[in-house]
Length: 444
Length: 159
Image (cartoon, rainbow over all chains, first blue to last red; front, side):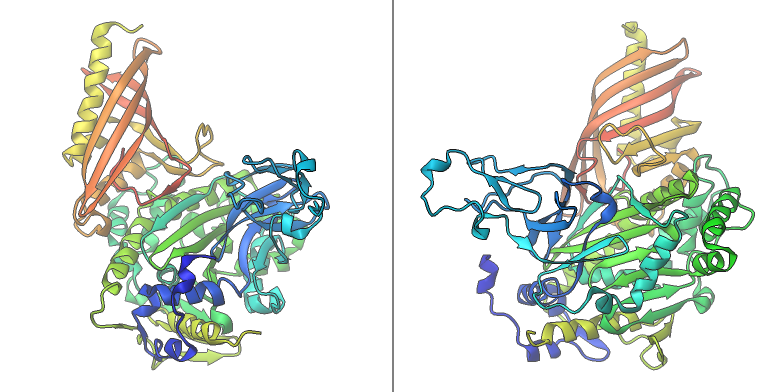
């Protein structure tokens, strides 16, 4: 595959030696051999989100994305099925598709004009008579390489390179609830992915972003430069967003007292989420807000009062599905962090339209996406700065242990898994426990 | 074609905007905006809809004022050390929409230098300007980044 294979991979004992109950070794973030093992045992073995069905409505629709170290095309075939193909011509190895999404009934290699169907099979080659008699269009070795293991959960398409994976719903566990919740919030019972996506690359390990998304301790410090001006600014000075941006900026400015209501949850498999965050104004579905009144009525008409209250009542923030998917159902937001190298990560930021909801609900989701996920975000840019500074420090072999001890003495367990207060680093410990388990698992 | 004097006034107004940004006078920069002025940086080439399609920045005066105050906060991590910029505005073509209002198209290049990193942004600016006293105010500035839908890194100083 790549020259990286010549790296000697860490053994299971090496990996166990990198994680203590309250500390993690810097090599987890900075060692290319550890990264290579992650590509193999995490991104090459677990179910990884690749696309949403609303991007693949008709035959020929495709999106280009990544799975482990592979660039892939997720396509809708003539047979109506979803297929996943490595984006590489089997003839001379050229990268085939050069756009992120589109519709194409055929993928044709510009080099010697081999032409493939959306299911990866070879449709034609020019001047076939010059190929030997044994050359067979139907021979899979002449087809775009297919990734066979694909499962969809309520419109979210996952794939794995694992030949023998456990069922997707088993991997998702209780995190299916947050996908259910986002879909159930649509009065028509369907989500539509928004056209606009942000792609941001930072110079740091992928796990730094996943930890940061589970970290409710940092915002008061990291984001004070946007909290303070937002607090000083007059309410409703903006005429375009009903003060949503200002409220979102202010929401990061909670003091130690306000941590009290927040609860962190950690599940087996490395999934985590937090409860009770963003509780003000437009963000919290005020009863008197006319948009919410209309939206709620549409939902009640479909689901009834009781179920509606239940759906809108779920207040979980930053639901992190291991290894790299983050969902915020109540704001219809989604992030995917894709590792590119041990010290390079691509973050893609998406949002969804709730079908059947008032247009203004979608406008708010779009505004949320911009405020929190744009490259010019007054919030995310400060996060990225810290992730990069961590990587810069961790790249050097000085004081090799990273501390994750906060909350160790006070974490609880309930039937769902680990539970803690906002100040705890329990979610990172849960992530690293899963990390060790996956990296040291015997091949199935 | 616009008369030479007005064209020149508009060019000088744009150069003043670049100077304010490069000298770190962000409050002075904000004063160039009309009270309901909008700064818009689309995320898609040819984007016409700021509500249904996310923008990199879509902010009116009220939100821009917060952005400007943040640039003046000592605690802004992403601004430590403070980035240095050179904004270059050129190929400026202005047209009169009425006695008082003008639309302006310009090309821009901005080099941002911070610590050991240097980045280059390029694209086109489209302005709606309105006369105010001796000068102008910005009703809308649309910044079309050449790589608006590409992979980005954090952007801090307005372009």
